[in-house]
Length: 264
Image (cartoon, rainbow, N blue to C red; front, side, top):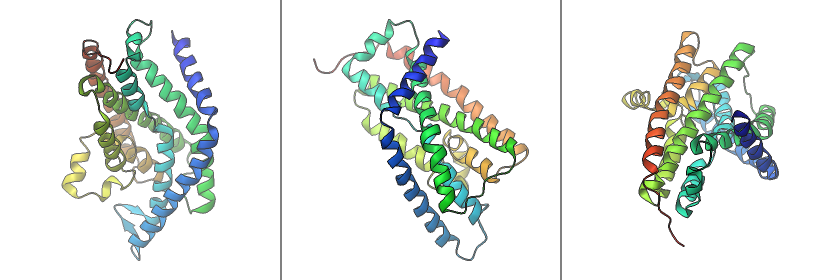
């Protein structure tokens, strides 16, 4: 069965490879996003050395790493699942000898591996040539970052699966998907680092899974999080990964009694 799931990863990777030109152009789009944020934060910093616990150099690296990390963990599984529920094609998944939710996770992984190799890596090198990014010199920190980035993918994908499965109950969950995407980009620290939020709101975000997607791995990479805090941050990611399995399982079990097909 494991080999079957690995084949799903391979097939999604090859499917993404067929449209790789779109992702090469995407590197330029992400570069423009990162460049605009760099100049915005440079103006915000002004004569100040540190804001939100980050120097301008760290902030530049944080922005670049956060956006390029997003290229790896981002996927549209929520829309795929919702579409399959609406047209009824998900019905056949109930009788097939594999777990539908796990297959979707593997499809997302295949897409993520493609993005990591052909988008994130060359994109990061391209940005490094343009902006003063500070890469860590410790190989161990690189290893920890990639482990944390993998958990970013897992947690973001879990949220996508949960949102997609709500199509069983809402019929049209387009609004929920839009709200989820905005919440992830804003509250994960992609657009604004978590430390920039007001004290009470920053404390609230610590009880939500969003910071585990972008802020924790990016802050670790830039040196904002060090020492024992790295272990704690990784522990937070593992905890959210395990906790999010519960609503996914509950929704999938309940969904089997809710299937109906729209249209004809």
